[in-house]
Structures are given as C-alpha cells and as structure tokens.
Length: 626
Image 1 (cartoon, rainbow, N blue to C red):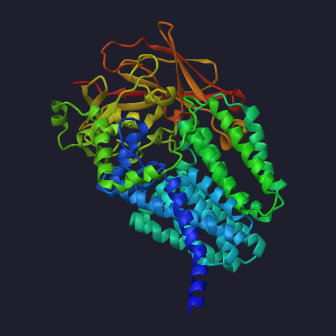
Image 2: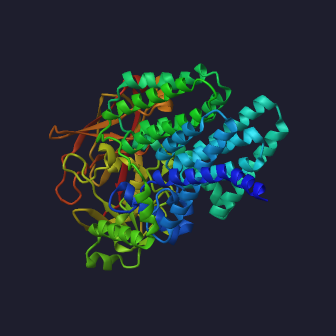
C-alpha cells in the first residue's frame, strides 16, 4: 500500500512541477490590461468596435474593417463585460500556449529542462494575442504531425478562424500555417484521401464558427470577401517612409532567408516553411506602417519565431542562437530611424498587472472614469445636442469619441477605414452602394471633425494628406446629400438633405502627363473641379509594393498668388478625383482662397512608377440656389 502511494506521488511530481512552472511564467509575463478609450484615431476605434459588440452587433457584422466582430478580444475596454471576457480568453489562451510549448519540447526531446523553461519564459514575455493565436496554431499543427491526433488539428483550425474574426491579419497568418502544412503533407505522403479529410475538417469548422459569429451565410461570405479586399490594399493608405538603414536591413534579410538552407534540421526547415507567410506578413505589417507599435510587433514576432525554432531544433543550437541574436539586434538597431523612437520597456514581473485585474470592479471603474474624462472634451453644447436629439449620427473621418461623449444614436458607415477598393476613375463610380449615398443607410447628421493640415488649414488628414483627397466617392456623397448646418472650431455639423444638391457630373478629355509636369486647372463658378489620376507601377515598383511597400506620392498646388502647397495622396484613390478648385483650406471662414492654377504630381521613387500619368478633369456642377 505504501509503495503504491509512493509510485503515484512520483508519477504526479512532473505534472505538478510543470503546472507550477506554467503558472509562474504566466504571472511573471502577464501584460498590462489597462485599456481605456479616448480622443484620437486608435482609441476612438477601440470605443466604436467595443460599443457595437455590446449595443449593435448586427451592424458590427456588416462592417468592412481590418478588425472583425470579435475585435474586443484584442482591444477590450470597459463597455459591457468586454474587458472581463477578453481577460479570460487571453488567460486561457496563454496558459494553453505555454503548456503546448512544454508539450512540444517533450515530444521533440531536443532541449534540456532548464533551457526549455528559459526559452518559454522569454517567448511568453513578448507574445500578444496575435502571436498567441499564430503560435498556438503552429504548435498544434506540429503536434498533429507527430502523433496524428485529429483533435490537435481541429483545435488548431478553430483557433485560426477565431483569429480571423478578431483581426484579418491574425487569421490569414494562422490559416496560412495550416494551408502550408496541408500542402507539405500532401507532397510527402501523396495521400489525397487524407487531404480531402483535412480539407473537410477545415471547411466544416470554418463554416460552423462563421455561422455562430455571423448568423447567416450571406453575411459570413460578405465578411470573407471584405477580408480579402482589405488584405490586398488597406496598408497602402497607412504607409510611412522613414529613412531606413539598409546596411542593417540587408544583412537581416540575408540571414533570415539563408537560415533554413544552412540548418540541416528537417523539423526546423518545416517550421520555417510553415511560418514563411506569417513572417512575410509581419515584415509587411512592420514596414508598411513603420511606426513604433508596428515595428516593435515585428521584433516581438521574431523572438517568438526563434524561440519555437530553438525548442524544436535537434542540432546546431548555438548557430540558431547566433542567427536569432544577430537578426533581432540588426532590426532593433534600425529602429532608431523611426519617428518618435523610444526604447522598448517592459515590466520586470507582471504580477502587479494581474493583481489589478483581480480587483475587477475597482479596476473597471477606474478605467471607466479615465475614459469618460478623456472623451468629455468632445461633449457638444446643449443647443447642438438638442438639435441632433434622437437622430442618427456618424463621425467622419474617424473621431467616434463625439458619439461616445454625447451618447448619440450612432449609425456607422459600412467602411470604417479608408476604402481602397472600388475606387475607379470610371464614371459609374457614383452609385447607391457607397457610404452616405443612400438615405436608408445614411445617418441624419455627420460630425465632420477638422484637423490641421500643416499649413494652417483645417482639412488635414493623417500623414500630411488632405482629407478631401482620401475618399473622393465619400466626399462626393456628402456634398450631394448633406448641408452644413453648424460650424465650430473643431467640426462641421452636416444634415442630410431631402433632395440631391448636384446637378450633373461631366468630364473633360483624357490627357497624358508626366510626373513633375505642371497641369493647368480651370476654375468655374458653382463647380467643383477635381483631377482624376491614374498611374502605373514599373516591374520594380510592383516588386517593391509586394515585398516592401508602395512609394510615397505627392500633389503640389500652385495658386494664383504663386504660393505652393504640397500634400501626400493615395494613388489607389486618386482615380476618384484629387480636389483642386475651389481650394478650401479653412471651412470656418467665408473668405475665398486663391484659385489653384496648376498642380504637379510627383513620387518619391521614379524608378518604381512609370513616368506617364493619365488624367481627366472632373466637373461637379451644383444646382442653383433658389
């Protein structure tokens, strides 16, 4: 009897030891959950997506945006129970991720116990929810490959689709791991029946989870179509172009590319292939919107990437460590070139972050107080709140904190972000399907908030652009269907008209120009003049766009007083028309700006864009005021 008890205790010791180790790593690496909302582009969207999940889920399912209906799991705030649900989801996912890494190490039998604990600790320190989902999908796929337990495969697919419904890039990266594995498995096994079975599981799990989230086949497939469209072009609207140090980045790329060929380990090569698309996606993510959060995400991904490789590798661990260290250091050294650079700081132990969550009521109340104080700056005066009353409202281009601060009836447009697809120079672009076009799907009021343009003007967009050039189709719909009823120093209040305001749209002859050539711009009373622009990438430009990012484009306005102003523009939306006359710098004044007499287009890298530009003058003629 005694001997039997001792045997049971001995068999339980490794399990207890691993459980304690997992909990310690989880607590030490627990991140800050201090998620509030406020004024500004990012925090305003945080409020919007969380608010819709709790209050208008049907509308949320219809949105075309890089984050999906479960976005609150990544960017939670105190609305409803979103923060608590997100905390529980994250905790379960991270505990499972840590356990799976230990499981993978046990199966591979390649790393010592203490080395494994150290690697797991380091990896856990840098994972966010994105990498937890991608990493968990990868490890489950590797475990399925080792022991053929179909449960591992089903769970990996379920997690990957959950990632897709949180954020498109997460889901695409996670599903790419599974898709690559299926292709590799078919290549080596030549088992078409097994592939059909695996694809059946993939499609069934994807369909069932999609139906649970969206409730209808049509809405689900609309989301998938929107995800495909956004994944192909959304980043172009967000590109930044700091001067990178390619003396550092070229060796980084060479080391990353050559490592799978230098390593003789079959398992390591498999992981490199499985994560190839995810690594490419993170490279694009980090260098397209090259600011601190996006660039740091690439570094964090590399740490997770190398950590899993180290766990799996059976030989040349020193070489793996050297490659990992050098690539991370090279990437980190280039970070000094990023605007508003700051060093990476981390809490040494995350136990205090965890303790804050445990006192949930007080923590939630603190966040709620901070958020309400933040958005209170955008609370409207009583007269304007009474004017709007219970009518539907939207904010353009992004400051949804006006809705939060005043508790208006929000009717968001379908495309929360800048719409890069379906922006054609074709004359049929002005239809009923676009935002603010149809009265049935448009709000009664729009709060068009103003931003500095760098020249003392009020129509500034992000990244030195003019907001009137970002979404020509949406701007046209507002001009045609809305009237300004109130102006403040922070926004214009637009009210929907009962009749359209535009009499006709007509186009001048199509003409070819070159970058750097001045283009004459007419001025006609009671008409808006816009320039439709179409340009084409060279072969090098297409490669640059695929593997790096689109080059920067600029429009220079020359006025009749010979003043010249320069703004960036997005080439994908320029086909809808770049605003020219009457030029509006400050809509709060009744003084007319000098006429634009010429414009000139240029790009930052002429070798990436064909010099020839197709242009067409667009005339928007308004009905006479009676």
